[in-house]
Length: 445
Image (cartoon, rainbow, N blue to C red; front, side, top):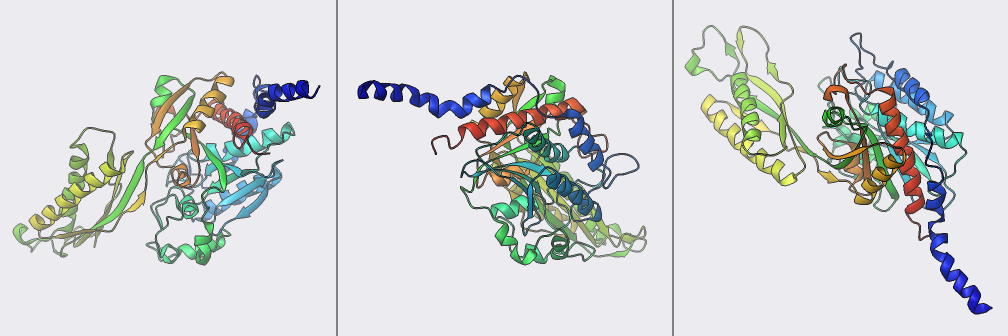
């Protein structure tokens, strides 16, 4: 009899191991998220920082950003989440799990660029909250604790290059970040205090490696690949690295009518040549690398004065960090040559860097399988935009889900993702969370 019982125990052990996954598989035929509810919250969030021409200007560390955060924080509490704000201003909403396991985190950001759209970041943030609501609707308990995160100031622009909250979580913010001021003299530390953070303790926002079971981010693609291919779900392979530095051309401001052309030290002319050099060096070799100069500021800014100073940012992106460094080195050499030719000095700051990051293979497979269960086709693709997930990849496994952007338009009031497309992404996120919850740490009691 004892031998018979032992044989039964051995035979059923694999079944016991896979019971959580089997329980997940039994619930894979119907839609779980509520499309109308998700769309309603997206429309309500778009009221904060709304522009007359459409879209929003909910720039990080502004009154509109504070109002949007308050709205989302209220939704989190209404969904039964235990809410906390870390010293970097990141908002976390916690849902307890049934076992003592690492937390599964998912979310995005709600800040925007100036004159941006209503979907960048918002679909992922409110899609994550919709997953929690759908779990609550079904009274479904997960083994892992779950947390929805709203990262601080993903877009950047005022005090840092972007990804501020996730950079704090990864411990990669530069020294002295807490004392930074913008052009108007406003302090980052003051804004963090208003957001519930604490600049003097920002290092405590760092998340140790091994603390999280993983991180998932739903996001609009911000490109045209999915839209043109008519594929509803993108499985992100990796996220480009981003290098941003500020460059200043310094010449001499003088009278525009009395200074001969051959005696001028025209900072704006030198900066203009430098900007074209950025484009030329980026295009010099084949690949997906891109370079951008998004603005220029000339001083003193009078029609009859030769500009004595011109300032402009240089941003480079690629999946290969070495290529970013190589292109940057060539650009800086060109700047030196242009400065000598124009009798102007061009100096650039050290770059704010966000390293490229590959997503976790097991998470990519979980996203593909979850989309297939929902009857949705997928396409693997890289992300040309930076995302908080690339910082989280420094300390946890990560996966990213893309949904289409109409016409490939983003960072624009014309940015648009249809209600069913946003809901498709949230549905795949819901299923991926449950799939990972069933399989991660499965060997643990």
